[in-house]
Image (tube, rainbow over all chains, first blue to last red; front, side, top):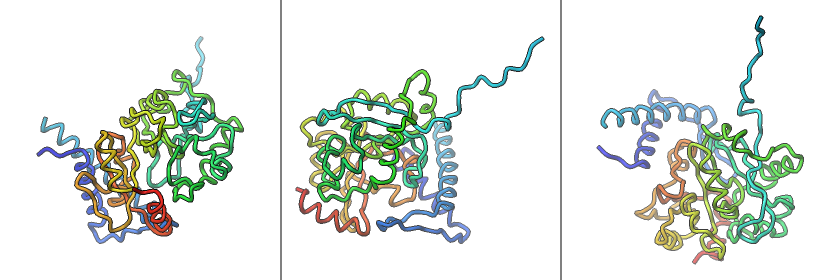
Length: 66
Length: 250
């Protein structure tokens, strides 16, 4: 299956988000002065870690497919 | 007998806070500007990307913004505070602090042989404040090529002095769908700021940082060539943005 780069990024985000909240973990969001919502620092770190692992796995899988 | 000599390694990357990447005339109006690259950031949206600050060399950025002299580094961007715009950059914080540091002499002038190592494994944000198109294209291209990847945004596509090669480096900022379509027809990838509830064009995706929580450092789609992006503006800023749209959009 061929996917575009932005689709790969989106897919990794979706997987990371699902894994982040998989065990019922309550994701903490923070809102800045302008009303923009983002993960708390702790949850952003956790999301980044999962995202990194997922992206690496997908990249490696792509490598095998070649 | 031989003696231990200790480490001969160069200083670690964290030893320098930043570098002066360019000092010279603005491509937009010829006034003196400076580009400073800083190594660390507190910006949670971008993550730990190297940030480049494009500032007037001779005027504090707060003052420059107040008297409209920031046109050397922001060109005709409609979001300049001087125009009553909704620019999200808090000029009194990071740009002011970088400028003061620059004037105190804390940033050495960049030398490829001595300093390229600080950039080689990093991703770079072109224009954390100031427009990359205010800097000669060759300079900005060289800065972009130092790292693993880059992001950049320009609001100068309509400026008379705009160098269209910046389409290779930057997303072109658009304030309306019509503007976005116009720039896309010229070969640019756009970054459109929209209000909550606005429609997304078929050629666009929503900013993944905004919609999926990823940081720019992991996404890197805003490189001028990957994708058209749209982002929503929230809260108090959206009110100012809306009135700005009426005044400037077309």
